[in-house]
Image (tube, rainbow, N blue to C red):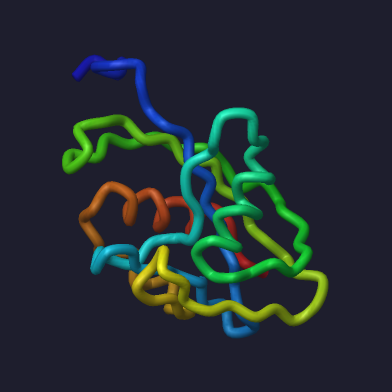
Length: 138
Protein backbone atom coordinates (compact mmCIF):
# COMPACT_ATOMS: atom_id res chain seq x y z
CA UNK A 1 0.00 0.00 0.00
CA UNK A 2 1.29 3.49 -0.81
CA UNK A 3 0.15 5.15 2.43
CA UNK A 4 -3.10 6.53 1.04
CA UNK A 5 -6.48 5.33 2.18
CA UNK A 6 -8.29 2.95 -0.17
CA UNK A 7 -11.48 4.88 0.56
CA UNK A 8 -12.06 8.20 2.23
CA UNK A 9 -14.97 7.17 4.44
CA UNK A 10 -14.29 6.36 8.05
CA UNK A 11 -15.93 7.34 11.30
CA UNK A 12 -14.02 9.26 13.91
CA UNK A 13 -14.13 7.79 17.41
CA UNK A 14 -13.05 9.19 20.75
CA UNK A 15 -11.27 7.00 23.26
CA UNK A 16 -10.40 7.55 26.92
CA UNK A 17 -7.33 6.61 28.89
CA UNK A 18 -8.45 6.44 32.53
CA UNK A 19 -5.81 5.26 34.99
CA UNK A 20 -6.26 4.16 38.60
CA UNK A 21 -3.80 4.93 41.40
CA UNK A 22 -1.80 1.79 40.53
CA UNK A 23 -1.35 2.80 36.87
CA UNK A 24 -3.87 0.29 35.51
CA UNK A 25 -5.98 1.45 32.57
CA UNK A 26 -9.76 1.20 32.42
CA UNK A 27 -10.73 -1.21 29.65
CA UNK A 28 -14.03 -2.42 28.25
CA UNK A 29 -15.23 -5.43 26.29
CA UNK A 30 -18.01 -4.98 23.77
CA UNK A 31 -19.90 -7.94 22.29
CA UNK A 32 -17.46 -10.49 23.69
CA UNK A 33 -14.59 -8.71 21.92
CA UNK A 34 -11.11 -8.18 23.30
CA UNK A 35 -10.22 -5.46 25.80
CA UNK A 36 -10.21 -1.94 24.39
CA UNK A 37 -10.56 1.63 25.63
CA UNK A 38 -13.94 3.11 26.52
CA UNK A 39 -15.39 5.48 23.96
CA UNK A 40 -17.06 5.43 20.59
CA UNK A 41 -18.15 7.29 17.50
CA UNK A 42 -18.48 11.04 17.24
CA UNK A 43 -22.00 11.90 16.09
CA UNK A 44 -22.77 14.67 13.61
CA UNK A 45 -22.64 18.06 15.33
CA UNK A 46 -20.76 16.83 18.41
CA UNK A 47 -17.35 17.97 19.53
CA UNK A 48 -14.95 15.17 20.49
CA UNK A 49 -15.36 16.01 24.19
CA UNK A 50 -19.16 16.01 23.94
CA UNK A 51 -18.95 12.60 22.28
CA UNK A 52 -16.61 11.32 24.98
CA UNK A 53 -18.97 12.44 27.76
CA UNK A 54 -21.90 10.77 26.00
CA UNK A 55 -20.00 7.54 25.34
CA UNK A 56 -18.77 7.27 28.94
CA UNK A 57 -22.33 7.70 30.19
CA UNK A 58 -23.69 5.16 27.68
CA UNK A 59 -21.02 2.52 28.24
CA UNK A 60 -20.09 2.93 31.90
CA UNK A 61 -22.75 5.13 33.47
CA UNK A 62 -20.00 7.68 34.20
CA UNK A 63 -21.37 11.19 34.56
CA UNK A 64 -18.72 12.69 36.85
CA UNK A 65 -16.92 15.84 35.74
CA UNK A 66 -13.46 15.37 34.29
CA UNK A 67 -10.68 17.24 32.57
CA UNK A 68 -9.33 15.81 29.35
CA UNK A 69 -5.77 16.08 28.10
CA UNK A 70 -5.37 15.41 24.41
CA UNK A 71 -3.13 12.37 23.85
CA UNK A 72 -3.15 11.95 20.08
CA UNK A 73 -4.89 10.84 16.90
CA UNK A 74 -4.26 7.55 15.14
CA UNK A 75 -5.74 5.68 12.21
CA UNK A 76 -5.70 1.99 11.36
CA UNK A 77 -7.36 -0.44 9.00
CA UNK A 78 -9.85 -2.78 10.67
CA UNK A 79 -10.56 -5.79 8.46
CA UNK A 80 -13.84 -6.92 10.10
CA UNK A 81 -15.37 -3.58 9.11
CA UNK A 82 -13.34 -3.27 5.90
CA UNK A 83 -12.67 0.34 6.82
CA UNK A 84 -10.09 2.77 8.07
CA UNK A 85 -10.84 3.98 11.59
CA UNK A 86 -9.65 7.13 13.31
CA UNK A 87 -9.27 7.44 17.06
CA UNK A 88 -9.05 10.77 18.90
CA UNK A 89 -7.61 9.94 22.31
CA UNK A 90 -7.67 11.75 25.64
CA UNK A 91 -6.35 11.02 29.11
CA UNK A 92 -9.03 11.83 31.67
CA UNK A 93 -8.60 13.16 35.20
CA UNK A 94 -11.65 13.20 37.42
CA UNK A 95 -12.28 16.01 39.88
CA UNK A 96 -13.52 13.60 42.55
CA UNK A 97 -13.57 9.83 42.99
CA UNK A 98 -15.71 8.42 40.23
CA UNK A 99 -17.94 5.42 39.86
CA UNK A 100 -18.41 3.24 36.83
CA UNK A 101 -20.48 0.21 36.01
CA UNK A 102 -21.38 -2.02 33.11
CA UNK A 103 -24.32 -0.98 30.95
CA UNK A 104 -26.11 -2.76 28.11
CA UNK A 105 -23.57 -1.21 25.69
CA UNK A 106 -20.66 -3.32 26.95
CA UNK A 107 -20.12 -6.76 28.40
CA UNK A 108 -17.43 -5.99 30.96
CA UNK A 109 -15.25 -3.20 32.33
CA UNK A 110 -12.28 -3.28 34.65
CA UNK A 111 -8.86 -1.81 35.26
CA UNK A 112 -6.15 -3.91 33.65
CA UNK A 113 -2.38 -3.78 33.45
CA UNK A 114 -1.25 -1.67 30.48
CA UNK A 115 1.20 -4.47 29.62
CA UNK A 116 -1.83 -6.49 28.43
CA UNK A 117 -1.62 -4.58 25.15
CA UNK A 118 2.11 -5.15 24.53
CA UNK A 119 1.89 -8.46 22.69
CA UNK A 120 -1.57 -8.13 21.18
CA UNK A 121 -1.98 -8.36 17.43
CA UNK A 122 -5.30 -6.65 16.74
CA UNK A 123 -4.78 -3.23 15.11
CA UNK A 124 -6.62 -1.28 17.80
CA UNK A 125 -4.67 -3.03 20.55
CA UNK A 126 -1.43 -2.01 18.82
CA UNK A 127 -2.68 1.58 18.75
CA UNK A 128 -3.45 1.45 22.49
CA UNK A 129 0.00 0.04 23.26
CA UNK A 130 1.71 2.67 21.10
CA UNK A 131 0.03 5.54 22.96
CA UNK A 132 0.45 3.99 26.42
CA UNK A 133 4.19 3.91 25.74
CA UNK A 134 4.17 7.54 24.51
CA UNK A 135 2.17 8.87 27.43
CA UNK A 136 2.85 7.70 30.95
CA UNK A 137 -0.06 8.03 33.39
CA UNK A 138 2.19 9.76 35.91
